[in-house]
Every structure is written in C-alpha cells, then in structure tokens.
Length: 289
Image 1 (cartoon, rainbow, N blue to C red):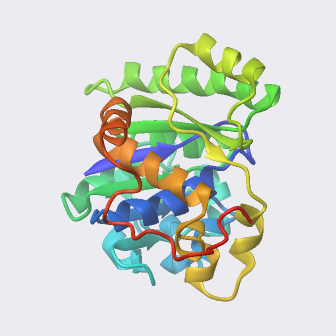
Image 2 (cartoon, rainbow, N blue to C red; image 1 turned 30 degrees about the vertical axis):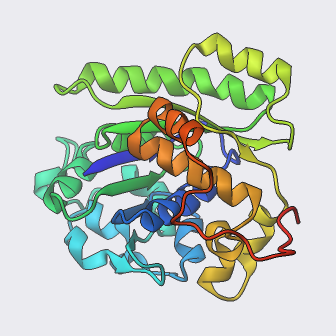
C-alpha cells in the first residue's frame, strides 16, 4: 500500500480539495483508496457525508480505543473508503488516556501511533491518502512517521512558498529518524493556477527548489462552492464536472502519482488525450464555467 501524506505547514493551500478529488480520480483508474482525515475540521469527512463523533473517528483508532478497521467507512464513491476526522484530533498530543502499546513514557500518544494502525491494514488498499491539517506539528509528525511518500500542495503566493521550506525540513528530519529512510518527497502540487498556467515569477521561485512539480491545478470558483451541495456526487469536482478542465488536471495528477510524473507525461504525449476510459464530452457541454 502506498501511503501519501498531503502536507504543508500553511493552511488554505488546497490539501483537502486535492485529497478528495485525487482519491476519486485514482478510484476511477481502478485503485482502492483509503482517505484518512487527520484534520480536526473534518472537511474531507463532511464532503463524503460523514459527521462522526469521537468514538467512530480516527482519533479513537489512534488512541487505541477502536481498531482502525472498525472506524473505516465505505463512501458513496466506488473504491473509496474514509477514516473520518473529528474535532478531538487537534488535542491528541495532550491526552493521557492512551493504550499502553502506543503511549510514551509520559503517558501521551506516541508519534508512531498512525504507523502502527496503518501496518495493521496490510494490502487492503492500493493507496492511503493522508489529509493533514495546516500548522499542527504533532499531526505532521504522526503522518511523516507513517507515510511512504509526501506531496506538498502549494498556492501561488509568496507566503505559500515561504511555508514550503520548513515543510521540506520536516520531511528531511523524518527521513533521518526512520530506519527505512522514508518518506520520499514526490513533489509540489501547485494549486490555483490561471488558465495560462503558473505566473513566471512564481514558476521561477518553484524552480529554485529543484524538486519535481505535478501538473498545476487550475483555479475555479467551483472548487469552493461545490462542497456545499446536497449530495456527495455533487460535492466533488471530478464527479460533478467530469469534463471540466480542472477535473482533467486532477486526472492528470492522479496518473502522475500512479506511474510517475515523467512516465505519465510521456504517455500523454504519445496518446490522444483524454484516454479512451473517459468518454468524450457530449456536444455543447460547457466546460469552462
């Protein structure tokens, strides 16, 4: 199972939106995807229609109150499952009522608690996507000590790029701690790009990091308004607007995750796109709303 953390120190850079839409895009490709909502706001959980209390949430599994298998929910989207979030996730590091196999000497939750739970899942899923909150170091450490790979979503502002450096330093520190030298940094996922792409000054700053970049996700007001719709298929861009340019970008990123950025771009250059598995849009379909 590939375990990918979507992580940035900065909030509001598109981590949850990316996790939700990429989970669905990977499921469209036939992959079995578990989305773990590590954010106390539980926005990913709400998107899939779950508003779980503490006892049925990821918080209970991490503390050893429930096995992870008991709190995982099958969603309305085929091949997508969810480990729901809950408000209590924000205070996990302050709780002292912790199962003995995951407690520190001080009685608080160990930073390897998530790794222990994911190890129990084995090969049940092809992917586990970790939706991490912004600005919560303890949750970040839980994720970095459990995941195999990291993607860093970033908006296209100077503040977003300022946040990239300490996030990359955290990834490097986790690699030093872990015996397997993981997680692997897969690259930046730029969000909020204009129709013409990333502005040149921002692209120059991204290039200074000399790390891979996924296909940028286009800006669209729909990404902020769709989650308020009444049903799950209406809330997720990939499902609600299957022929929209933003949806196409998410599918491209899902392919880049699945087979690698270089391989995916080479394949797209060789084939007529979109792939045959995605039907051509009906005549007069409005794609640029």
